[in-house]
Length: 438
Ligand code: UD1
Image (tube, rainbow, N blue to C red; front, side, top):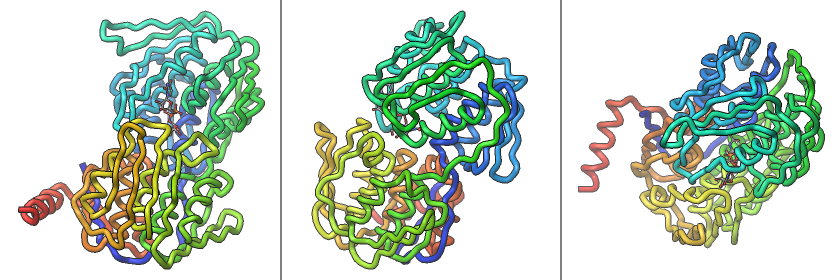
């Protein structure tokens, strides 16, 4: 497990390009199984989650290669219909292979993903929807961990989603691409990452209408073809780095920002009093004083404020000049950072019943030994460390590498002092932190 050491107190300055989008890349990588040909995916981020999805493609029989940030997938020889339990345990998004493998082979065996650190995360919407597409499902083991789905033909149908789940919408689309007839999804997720999946599939020859709306219609086709596709930049990485400037202070220009996907994030960050100047995909963020508090922010499905930006915003508000509140409405346990930030001097009250945090801004945070419980939580702690006085060590930082190509390189370019630590150094730092407490 790697750690990140951050020496806080530097204002951020300079210019930085935003990497390709993780959540757009993952479903598109799964979808490459469907075209039975070559997919060239440009601007693909080199992050752990992508490497993991690529490993599964190889396990399924695809040939995969990289050319800089372009991922080339040849799925002609794919033949395996089993996604291992180990793969799904490593990364929940492997569940996107449910729809992709089923769509191509009319059969898939895949582990049932368990809960994770941010919530129970069941897949009932996915499975209920597949039943409506004439897919039979049975567990292969007593513990009901391995599920086998099969069908003689996928038949289009009308599907009403109880909640606009991103993953369920994507799995339905993946399954329905080769269906007989038309599939209609009501209350579909409107996230840009659903739109990206549709765009990739349309480029490959699929017939899909209504992307980006709550009503998506997929007319089954007989075949797809080779495709070249450019993935967008990552709206959450862009939001994370912008939040860092607001917390630590500074003046930074970000290039390749997917501004069109970030309306709610930009609106909320502006409320803190920073300047955000937009010129196409080039965005300057200037923050010169303590952030203003924000009365109440609710996480919501797109186009609302994203749950994936909640931890980073909490770090911003820890230093605000007043009281703010966050209501997490998407996941049940996404407030692990509260305890970690308290170690850094933050004042936060948590009401677990209503899933609401009240943040009493403090003038300054101080360095501490803190733990990354999940990907975005870890990024939130790095941000807090940049703005804190003294040294912060974020342990279990591997989870950050799931979604950020190199967070130390990126903040380093902006003048911050931070680095990955070796196991030995981590041990010494933990020892010092324990000594300091005793
Ligand atoms: C995706 C994103 C994740 C983001 C989330 C919400 C990817 C790879 N991941 O995750 O980064 O935080 O959207 O924007 O794009 N639910 C059920 N039953 C289901 C499916 C979902 O109850 O069958 C619940 C979940 O537990 C959660 C909520 O619905 O509370 C939203 O989940 P969903 O939109 O499906 O998120 P993911 O696709 O897993």
